[in-house]
Amino acid sequence: MLEKNILRDILELSGEIILLTDMDYNFLLINYEFENIIGLSKKQILKAKLTDFIKEKKDLIELSQIPKTLTFISKSGEKYPFYIQHVTRDHYLPDKKKAILWIGVPKASTELKKFQKELIRLNRMAEVGQLASGIVHELRNPLAIINQASGWGKTLISDNKKKLGQDGDELERVFEEIESQTIRCRDITDELLNFVRELSTEKKEFSPIKLIESTLTLINADLKSPKIIIEKKYEHRERLIKSDFRIIQQILINLLSNAIYAIREKNIMDGKITIITQDQGNMFKIIIKDNGKGISQKDQEKIFDIFFTTKPRGQGTGLGLALCRDIISKLGGEIGFSSKYMEGSEFYITFPINGS
Image (cartoon, rainbow, N blue to C red; front, side, top):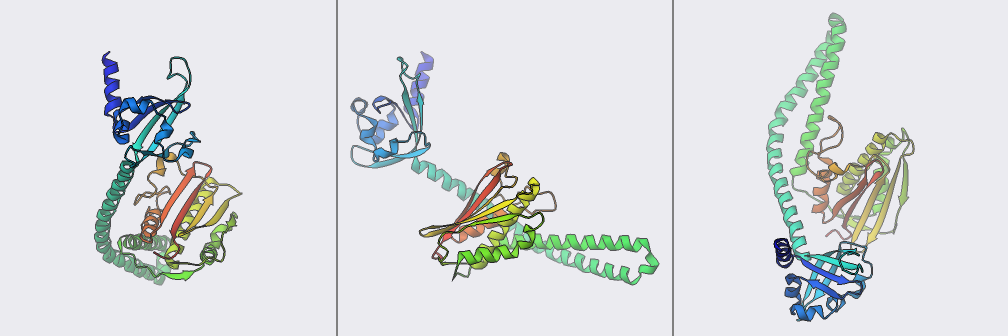
């Protein structure tokens, strides 16, 4: 009895709507939240069907597509959109007939949670940006001194190679490594500054197809050994867009380089990258799909985090995708992906066609 009372209270006090219907959408059970939004008594609602309170009846045709949005219409004509999960079972009813359990979350609260999550991310990025900017400025002077000293050391060794013998060769390699790592540190600090610096865009009209082709020319050498095939699926070849050519090219280079790396890491001889363009009305979409190693499930939630990288130490800064996300959002677009480990990844960017 106690257990039934607890379950009843959970059902009635839940912030979600909870419904049970038969396969013809006749109500068998409803909770208070549904009564509240419809504005009718439980007795009145139980005499009706679910379809009596749905804005679009066609939304109920395909039950397998979950979650889906259903908009309920109240007694006063107000519309209440909900994200719905539904499960069909044959053991809900005593006679073993099938029934459908419906659980719905208010769409507004779901979108608010997404907004709050994005706000937290932006605040975190702003804090990281301020910290990074200070660190970069502090590092630049010592890095310049180290770089200058390594160059001076190499000159001294070169002038005294006969005296130093084999030790001179070893010292020269050491100074070359110091110089190489100093340059790498400088590049990282430059990336950090680009990440926190206010984006200045220069929006001009250009062909996205020509943008992609010129980008492929820049990375052509990386596609050769072993050869990676580029497949192109371009829609609306004559379309012109207004945006920042240089910035979008920077994003494409990053995504293509990651695709190449994923294919090399999988160590296959039939590497393939597919580039797809789609005209979506006010937005233009570029998709880059590869058959590389893919991203593990545990890493997928972190790939846009600053300083996160799946590459070995010394080969990635973790700024690439974080920077891409920041740039594309400032252009009014978005970046997203899907990936299956050991099967490949698909990244896409969208951005406004008219530049705003």
